[in-house]
Image 1 (tube, one colour):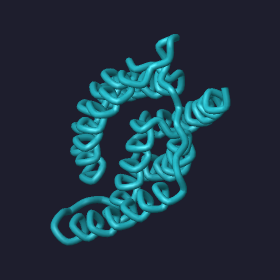
Image 2 (cartoon, helix red, strand yellow; image 1 turned 90 degrees about the horizontal axis):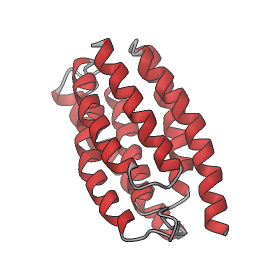
Image 3 (cartoon, helix red, strand yellow; image 1 turned 30 degrees about the horizontal axis):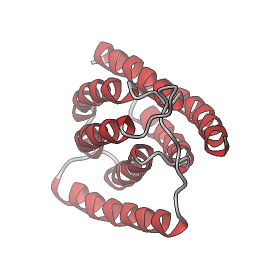
Image 4 (cartoon, one colour; image 1 turned 30 degrees about the vertical axis):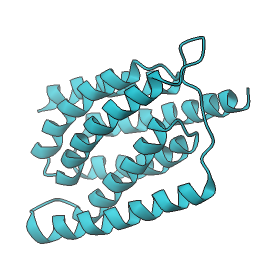
Length: 185
C-alpha cells in the first residue's frame, strides 16, 4: 500500500499548492488524489476518512464549478469574506456531524479512532466548503485540522501521509498569507 500512498500524497500536495495559488486546476488534481486516498484509508480502517474522500469528491466538483465562475482576469479565483454568523453555523454543523459520524463509527464499525477520525472528517468538510466558497478562513481551519491529522497518521504508521500533512501545514500557511493579500488587494 505504500506506493499507492506515495502517489496519493504527491498528487494531493500538488492540488493544495495549486489551491494556495488560487488556480482552478487544483480541483481536478484534488479529485484524483481523493479517489486514490479513499483506498489508502479503507486499508488503514480509517473509515470516516474514507467516507470523507467521497464527500470531498462531490465538493470538488462543486468547488471547481464555483471557482470557474469567479475568476479574475489573471485566471485566479477572487476571494470573498466569510460572515461571522455563517462561520458559526458551519462550525456548529461540523460539531453535529462529528458527533453523528463518531457515534456511527463507534457503534457499527471496527474503526480505529472513531471519534477523532469523525471530528477531523466533519471539520475537513467545513474547511472544504469554505475553500469552495473562496473564504480565507478555510486556511485557518485547515491548519487546525492538519495539526491533529499529523498525530493521527503517526499513530496509524502512515508515515508518507504524515509527511504530506506536515507539508500541508506549510502550504496552508502560504495559502493563508496569499489569500489574505488577495482579499485586501
